[in-house]
Amino acid sequence: MKYVVVSGGVISGIGKGVLASSTGLLFKTLGLRVTSIKIDPYMNIDAGTMSPLEHGECFVLNDGGEVDLDLGNYERYLNITLTRNHNITTGKIYSKVIERERKGDYLGKTVQVVPHITNAIQEWIESVAKIPVDDTGLEPEICIIELGGTVGDIESAPFVEALRQFQFRVGSDNFALIHVSLVPVIHGEQKTKPTQAAIKDLRSLGLTPDMVACRCQEKLEHQTIEKIGMFCHVGPDQVIAVHDVNSTYHVPLLLKEQKMMKFLSKKLNIGEIDQSALTKGEALLSKWRHLTSSHDKSFETVTIALVGKYTHLHDSYLSVIKSLEHASMSCNRRLKIVWVESTNLEESMKGENLSEYHKAWHYVCQADGILVPGGFGSRGIEGMISAAKYARENNVPYLGVCLGLQIAVIEFVRNVLGIKGSTSQEFDNYKEEDHITPSVIYMPDVDQIKLGGTMRLGIHETKFTANTEWSKLKGLYGGVGSVFERHRHRYEVNPDLIEQIESKGLHFIGKDETGKRMEMIELKDDSHKFFVGTQYHPEYLSKVLDPSRPFLGLVAASAGILDDVLKRDDLNYRGEF
Ligand code: GLN
View 1 (spheres, rainbow, N blue to C red):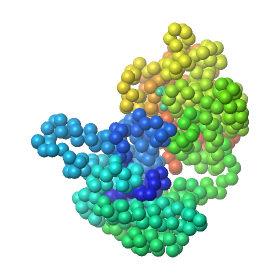
View 2 (cartoon, rainbow, N blue to C red; view 1 turned 90 degrees about the vertical axis):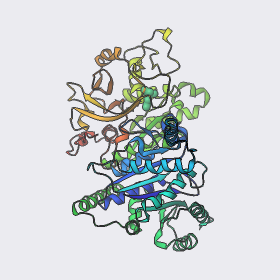
View 3 (cartoon, rainbow, N blue to C red; view 1 turned 45 degrees about the vertical axis):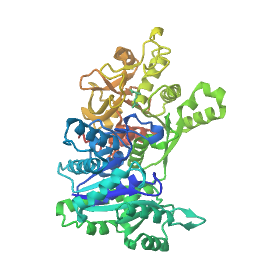
View 4 (cartoon, protein in one colour; view 1 turned 120 degrees about the horizontal axis):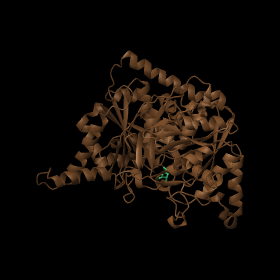
């Protein structure tokens, strides 16, 4: 196993995740099997209870792990399936060590950060790296480890120390370190001091960079590269410039141009790769090139209004954005997302800030399609309901994901079934004593008190119901009988209302394996372009080269090409999990 650690200096949030995934992809194009581990030095056990507005989206894995959004990047770039253990946090490591201590495993020793925590980290990495993650079912050959935060933070110290020891544990042939740094431009000059200081910090902790990846707005000038090489004690071929490019999908190609793989293959002493693996890798590279170059040449735009409640931090919807991008690439369209904070669509906004209200509605009305993504809590719900009503009544393509499905159902129950005031039991304004039938209820089998890791999580089967051949969504999934997608919810559509809702034209075209839980809705109305909702989150399984089908449907319908897309012969649904 060869380990490639990606760490960061200067500031966080400069694209370490994209760099790490792109490096992984390049190893894959050499024909190697790649896995990845993300280390998050925070105390939380997982990302499940963290605010999306603070940390960005919580990504969900097949096994139900609620993890950092970078794991989503890895799965998407590398087409792999990770487990919850691929995301290491301080909380997880300490729990494990404390559990062992309580069992008496340390035989009376004083339990300390060094060696007990640092050993636990190294053991964790070694065992998780071996888990097969791709379609070959074989042990990976390369493990990319991304260390979250910046080197020098108090919280990451035990991890940095563990990695320092790890390089000796696995041997220098099997360990490479890429340090990602920032080169700011001040008064037109590319400044190298922050990078010099970051590398000095790294070296003082016993880690030596094999490559320094410099994030910068413009291409790195030759003299900047030389200066970094000289002051950071690395050769010029070890300095990689990662300047801003058209899209993150260009980053692997940018790294390749700079011969990053040549250097890393030598450092890691990567031997002969068998011909069939090589051919597979080359095919992947050419597909990737084709996709990025043809996307650069598409000029028609499709505009999607994303009506959400965490729009102030776009990372809250990272997988949703990526899924829209994948779908747009597949439709040869440029994607324009207009961000609409759902509270701004509410009547009460008229009094508070009339111009924001008008602006928000202007965006919604101008868009080719409307997306209501997942979310929790009552703020902004009424705005989303109004957006869903607008989409249904005005033949505007609509996709509701998780909360977005629940919203579409509430809107339908209120405005078509006429049950005024019906809502979800999740929202504060639902009162038992009003005796209004709720549209959405608590799932009976879900813990209502403990919030961490207790939702309905991970991959589950959804079966298309009988007589759904008319369904566009089913067509998008290639006409299969069932699909496997990832979930994260606590509430579900009230089964008591199903018959009434269906009798008015909104059909539950997909249900769980018991037939009791509603998973997919679609408006059966030939005159509506596309009105669909999924209780699951299709965005978690969207891949660059295999876009998520509900998103493909939304984008294609919004671009006016859904009929053509439905005739495509590449709609075979993978059905794997
Ligand atoms: N809050 C809703 C529920 O728990 C929707 C969840 C979501 O959108 N992920 O069911």
